[in-house]
Every structure is written in C-alpha cells, then in structure tokens.
Length: 390
Image (cartoon, rainbow, N blue to C red; front, side, top):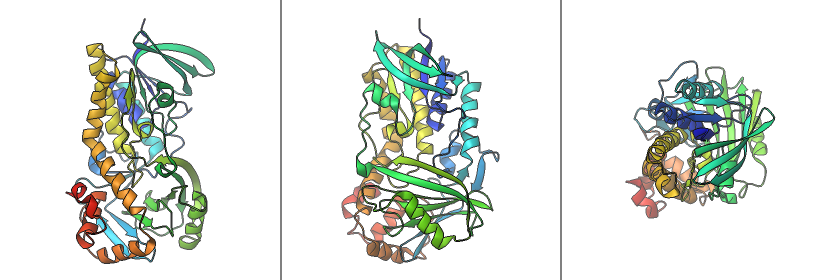
C-alpha cells in the first residue's frame, strides 16, 4: 500500500512550491521539515526579483520588508555603478521577511491539500519494486513510509541527494561561505541595495547591504574559502568597523551557498532535487529564491505527470531536468562562465571597469546587462563570452 504519491523533504521555497503544485493536481503529498519552525533560521540576504516573485504569489506587505528601485555596485577604490530596477528581469525588486514568507508558502501547500510535518527528518531511502521506502524520524519516533516519488529540497547539504546517489559534489571553488548581520543605526537608502566587490572586500564573493525598512538592513559577506586568507566573519567585521562603526547588530546568520552553476542532472529513479539541493543558486549573486520556486513548480508538475503515467524512472523524470535547464538553467551556465572570468580579475582591473561605467545609466538590474555594458567598454575582457551576452 502506498502512503503518499509524493514526499517533499524541506519546507523552503522549493519544497513548499513543489508540494503545493503536486497537491493542487490531486496527488497525496507529504511535506516534511527538519526544523521545529518553518523559516527559521533565515539563511540568505532575502532579496528577490519583482517579476520572478509575482509569477507565483501576489506580494503581501506582511512579508515584504522593502521595495527596491536601484542597486549600487562599489569597486575597491570607491567607484560606483548604479543599476535601476525599471525593467523586467531585475535581480532585486523586493527584500523579504523570510521567516514570514516561508511560512506563508508552507500554508499555501497545506491549503492545497499537502500534509505538513515539522521537526521531521528523512534518515534513510531505499528503492523497492519501483517505489521508495523513506524512513523518517518525527518527534523522536521512527517510521517507514512508502511513496512513488521523493523531492529533495533539503538545502546545500541535501541528505536526499546523497542517499539517492545524485552527484552534487562541490569543489572548494564551488561554494561560498556566508555571514550576515541584521543591523540598525546605520545610514543607507531604503530603496537601494548595495554591493561592494573586489578581493579587498571579499575574495571570491562580495559584501552586500539589503534594506529591511527604514531602520534596519541585512549586511553580509560571501567569500570563497579557497581564495580567502581569513574566514567570512573576519571580512565582515572589518567592513562593519570601517563603514558602520556605530551600527548595532541584532541578529547573526551563517551558512554556505553553492556557486557551482548548472549540474548535469537533478534526477534519478523516483527522486528529484530542487533549490540549493540541486545547486540552483546563481553562481555570481548567490541568489536562489526564485530559481528554487521555479524548480519546485517544475518538480511538482513532473511528479504529477509521472504518477499519471505510472512511470517514476530516471528517464521519465528527466523532463524535469529539461524544464529547469530550458528556463533558468541557461542563466546558470552563462553566469558560471562570467563568474570564472571575474575571479581572475584583480582589484585594479575591477576599478578600471567600474570607473568606465560610473555615471552611465543602466536601466536593467541584471548580471547579463552589466556584463554586456562591460563588454561594450572593454570587449577583450569578455570576448570569449560574447555568445552568452546576446
């Protein structure tokens, strides 16, 4: 006897959208989350694109901390490049209250018919007769559930991926170590996000400021451990001492972000991975919320089709790979190539690039548009990437 058509592991944006999508189509769905409280702890800067978010939900002031109109990129020597968010495709349009937002998405999944269990962990996965026996530990008790499909949306460490045998290995140059402070008593424009780039600030990454209303902001850093001489907290503390000496720290968040780019496959028999578990974060920005929601939707649709066809094989589930690769996967490939190029640039070159773009109105807040402007000014730097910038 089958307990569930689909079990989704992880109640972040990818998992909740996957559970909601599958449940809306009549599947029997279980969504499990290892933490006692969904949305806690927050693990990212909380920025999302406006048009990306609105594909899935109508923005609600309850979980929108700020609306962003522009972004500013600051080079090591202080040259500033301004991007506006006037066009669709912008990288940042809203800064979320993730604690509230994640719970909101989980509630949508529940309203669609999915069963939701917190403080529940997947501890073992075995395939038998074309189905999966998933052993879970819930409230201290262990039980085994039989399901047709498992969707692993369980983050960068993804136990589901490991148990299912999907290769999500990360090399030292494919992961950023991140630390973020929620700060008050600092000066910033509440309608603008800020990014400090260069090895001076964050080797292999950058420092960011995302407003959380008028009086607080997320200030964080991501560094590539293979390139950094110190840990991420050291770089952030030095920056805060220099830029915001009077700032007060209200909350600390730490974590890792995959910057691998597109993986070869996120599926195997009976299993699909979504979000950070499938390395769906952007290799340059580290942002992954919208990609995770898209992946969750594609996984939910594919799960429905698989149940309808009675086929849970890797070959059938590869239509999920095709969907995410044909959507945001192309951007992951392009941005990974751009990231690899950027990692080779020293701070003097970054300063020259920023100086040449300073004062130039760039009306689209996107990696592609920024790279295109650099290409126009300095074609030799990105010449081998010209096909990706069309």
